[in-house]
Length: 295
Image (cartoon, rainbow, N blue to C red):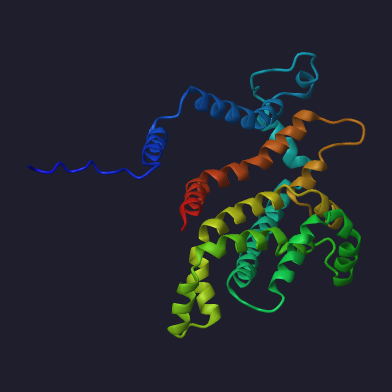
């Protein structure tokens, strides 16, 4: 008699994984699209409102029922912004400060994160805990000694007083350290050492390419944070050498606020960030996806 072979035994949980994979392969439902559309509209509403008010005259804005459609006075209000404050100088200062600060934060944070992640030295854990603990200290507590230090160096009134204190951040060090722990295998570092690479060369040729996805995210977030910073530039920069946020604050007078003028300036200040997101959007999403599937 011919023996009948037993049916193959499927490993437990295989059917559930198959069903889960099929569920992920399905198209998102109406609820998902509805939530995404609501999120996009909610995010775009403040920008649209700024453009809406900035495109009308001040007498229309003060009406009991605000307008719902844009007017035809945005260019006129934008010209008033240029005449009221040193807008282009403030724009240049903001671009310079945000670009230099974001680049320095990425470089030094990647360097320190690589040291904490892959180098073994005495006290590394305690030092990392100390660096992370500094994030719990409010920025306002260090304003007075930091201002005194900037005055001693003669940097008050200069953009260097806005750049130098933030060339590296505790969050950036912790963020890059957490990413590089898994992104750079120890075996790869040992192989580079056996090939005669110095530690600096290992950092530049091994760690930096592996850290590009996280570095792109950190650079963009730091750029946005510095671009919108108001508190510290208000303290150390004069009115004739402001950043963009300080220049927008100068549009408000003590007794009367022309909201069409202020919101037209706010819209103009948001345009560079929108252009940045449009230009780097694909690379930003690609960096997030590479970070999600690493390892």
